[in-house]
Image (tube, rainbow, N blue to C red):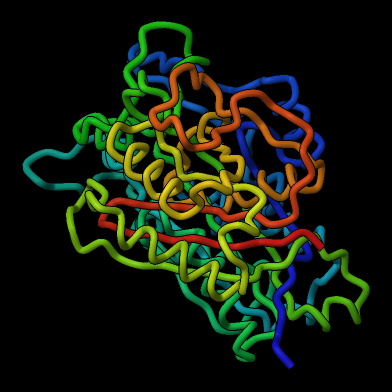
Length: 401
């Protein structure tokens, strides 16, 4: 018998909220947390307000070694486990799969670099932990007592979706019965903003911050950086049913690939991105015509949106499933975007609601069915797409149960 994989719990920290109720309320009220940076009036960001990781961890001395992105990972992971009712010894043999990005808060950690010397009075003895990609995983494992197979994935904007996909494969293949998977990230530090400014990736908007993010619009000029985290408890389907878990969705297929084309730009023909999505569909044993909704990567950058719109049209053609772009609501959360967009998609799936792509006034592709007005529309099968720097491509197929 084929092993199936269920999502039985979700933990999320986002600029839209931290519970399904808060998230769907913001989507329906068209409320976003976009704001202009005080230190750089041209740049708009989507921060998470009123966040303190200690409200999740309690008194825990090693929380000082968590950079802000890692804090979001830990907080959402703890919520996912606590919401599941599967605690203590029940998590001992679980796997742990984490999507993580680099800590670009270099100026914040080393404000007085002179002549290449970073040592200073007060520098933490273990400052390196704030820059190691697996620090979040280490803290999550300690707090939850997790000892099973694990992996920290750092494949840019594809990282957390790939972490979830790898956890799915481990359970499907019989290596694990349970795994915690997701990611967290923040690039809102001066170093992070500088990095994306230099790469000419950011939306530079002198008008209303709420109008800055505009995926697939002809007037797009870059993305709005966001932050947050989301984690999922994945379990072998029959075991989840046996313990009486609430099954929120089933993961049915996963695919990933590399462009091997350019460090920042997507492949011109989109063949490898299409291959990742096709692989996920094939593993899920569904055709493109059976997909009810597509959660697009949709960054709002010139090349990404153009290539992805072509990819969607090539894949789905005349079936034209509705396409949403959640970065228009939460910003681009870098290595955490796949996990956060999966979390929001699951909320929408449960509510039977498709949120509009905000600020989409003139679509860049006339044959793609972009959602331009929020609507109640039940959907049971969705594809999540993510594409990242370095030519990283990933896709996940989920079904409502």
